[in-house]
Amino acid sequence: MSVTELPDQAVPLQHQIAGHRHEKGNLYTGMLKHIDGYVMKPVQNNQRGKTEIEFYEQVFQSSHPTLSKLKCLVPHFFGLHQFVSDTAVHYYIKMEDIAAGMLKPCIADIKIGRQTWDPHSSPEKQFTENMKYSGTKQPLAFCIPGMSIYDVASDQVLKLDKHYGRSLNSDTVRDALRLYFNSTQIVEKRLLAEILRQLNTVRVWFEEQRHFLFYATSLLLVYDADLLKERSNVLNVRIRMIDFAHVYPAHNSRDSNYLEGLCKLIQIISSIQ
Image 1: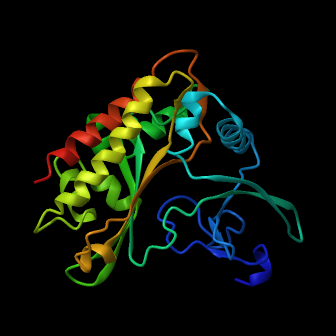
Image 2: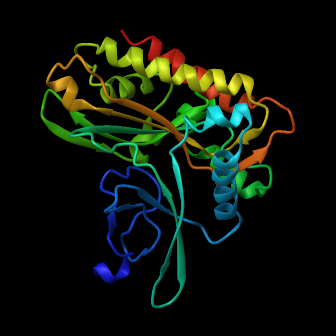
């Protein structure tokens, strides 16, 4: 791929673990990392792209107390980037790099909710979505589309994609999370405690908010395994909500679909010992 196919001073995001990528001729579809440190997410040229931009703008321009709390739970939004190629104009959402500064980032993309199709989806789309990740999504209301794990014991990086995620069920998903937390032999209790603290912050926000219904959105869990390897007293853990192409007004209702999956995730992580 020629560098001219990408915006100036931007390269493919190395730690992207799910979603479309710059590969197999699919240009302008993958996540990018700009030299200035922010991540660039391609804007879809349809209603989904418009929905995601409007969501970020609403959250970061609002002074409402509930939305002000949400600003801390999503990547910081830096506006839009325009890139003109030989054939079209492309737009990117500029956002915070959640793994910035981490030497050995461990990243998990966990999609929350049993219903991952939005209210305007066709019956065919609903059926297709319901079949994906059914081993975990149906009983637990969440699934794992991808993970990148620095394994402290072997000093190797393990990348697990959607095929691994679709092989999981309600029994094996706990082992997958133990693997992600570098806790297959010795449980990293301080790491799990901090993960749970941040997940419960998200849970409290969802129990209070009546602004949005989130479909097909994920929680991005990121921590620096280098600090585990060095047995540091400091942990670097960041959890953010991501992917907002299917966000709808809640009309003062509770997002029970999201809350169910989040609570089941917290329950399973709490049981790791």
